[in-house]
Length: 220
Image (cartoon, rainbow, N blue to C red; front, top):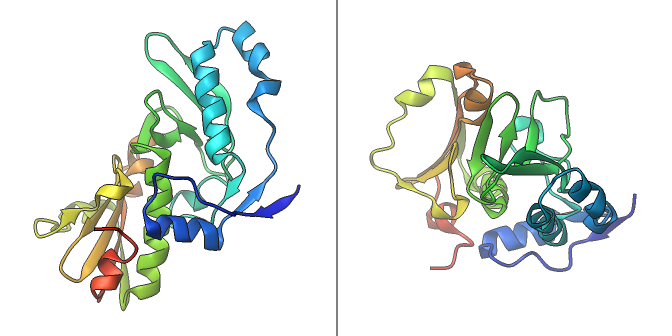
């Protein structure tokens, strides 16, 4: 497996996320979708879905980023594969292999969502960019916070976020980020939804942040 430095980050990311990808990401070789295109089309996968997979592979394929705080780190690296679905419900495809033995796969949904899939589909972020932004924000917040508190299970629902605003760049669905006066809160509900496992709810509170810690790397 060849490893290469990331010379430029995909567009559509904040400066924080671009810097994160350039500083901490590497590229590994992945096989082009064209090699399997006809095989998938012959099996009934719509050509438009294969085109979506090819677009994902061109934009994200082979990008290896540091592990996420949850989901046992997320995909080892991005790579399109394993299309599944139907015309009535839409089509999903694999986003990359797991780093560790988790009971679900990482997938891109019918509308471009990034999420996890087992018996249920749990979209974590509205886009792949949102997942990358969340990784970058977790790295940034953990570097600048004076204290990090982990909250699990039912206690997550008792977090008071009334004085917080959502962090838009993460495009949160099951997973969300919230910004307060001097803290950031990351809420992860993906495993709870995917596995019907309420105890899987987890949150991290990054407190003691200054203005750079709260917003650094995001263009105004």
